[in-house]
Length: 113
Length: 114
Image 1 (cartoon, rainbow over the protein chains, first blue to last red):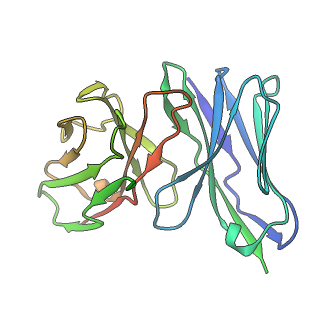
Image 2 (cartoon, rainbow over the protein chains, first blue to last red):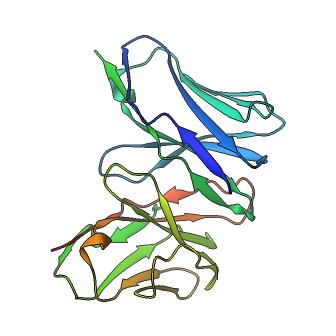
């Protein structure tokens, strides 16, 4: 069955540094992968999508990479700010249906001022 | 336009009672999803609607859970005879039926069963 793994330990970094979060998946080759941000008490918010034929995608301070050989996506936040502190979820299309997503459990990011 | 809305935002109920949770998706979004998120956990898929039909109910944990959608808009998730293990945040999301199917989430309903 499909499996997504994100580091369950919180990532704690200093303001201004680059945060890098990892998403690994098994047993499937998705056509695309998505990243979401979730703040406490709120629903997830869509951030970025990357397709299987794209190696890298950027949006302002965010960068996502997608290595289909390693079955891994990396999510980078450059020049991190305390406001970036949140839980970041990766999601990929389900094997049985491309319009449904399976979500990872998320990695919590803490940016210290 | 307005985003996805859910009501109530919080619901406290006694064990054994029935509850009904409501979701108003983004206008024009044909796909609607319900998820459950326990404290500190990831999103657990419950059910998916395409229009008014539910082609995938595979995530519903038991027959106490049911959902319906009318008029390709509002959806309600009903939990009968609630149990304490039903306590969680219930999230609704909608998306257009076009690639890449990013989902837009509501704020969730926090359900507490005492």
